[in-house]
Length: 155
Image 1 (cartoon, one colour):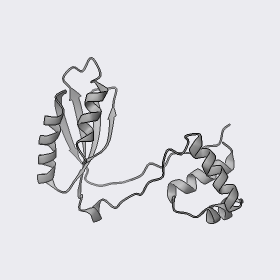
Image 2: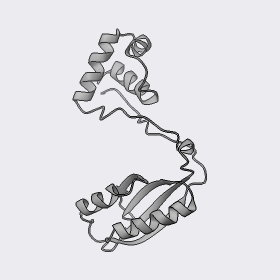
Image 3: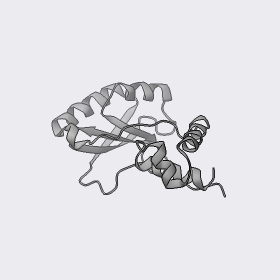
């Protein structure tokens, strides 16, 4: 990756709808040059996919939570297939990561309200026979939202 690739990735993270012509204007390339670079970045796996970011509040998902999860056997990781299958059945789950430290996993969830949260937690505990304890943390304010990575050219 060079500086131009880095600039393109930064611009695409902000708005993937930007036309190739506009991206080219901003980085000093033709639209065709931008297309070729973005194609190479996709083929190499640097760009995994292009997606749409929805407004959670406008969808009525007013409650964002993080669940700190401890598995029944905290000495060993859960069966990944079992965990993936349980999470697949729960559309409220936005992200899930296994961790080091005092919790085994953290799960990011968006729901409509506290009633929907209670129902989700019931389904979550039923779907996850491997869970020992869940601590729910409700987000009071989003100070920063996004997945913009600090992109740098190869040095």
